[in-house]
Image (cartoon, rainbow, N blue to C red; front, side):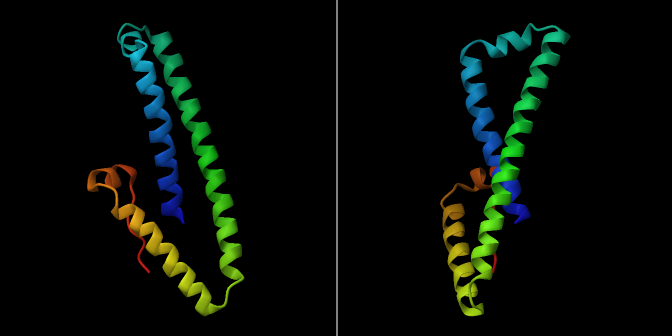
Length: 115
């Protein structure tokens, strides 16, 4: 579960910050940083850290909610059903990971789940 939590955080950060920086760069964000003084850079850095912190908190909350519901679902199953459920879950997850390029999987920190 810890690995899934970290993956979610990284995916969320990459998606959010990537979109924000792409948009910002097209608006001259790179030029603004290049010519900025220490005060402006401090404000920009703080804003980036603040946004990243919010995303991490949201990702943590989502992962906790997921883990809680997953554990409830698993605990309600018999041993055989639980094993089958986990096997199906891992197979579907692994299928998604294997459909990524090696570079993308490495950048996101995604690895297959071993049973």
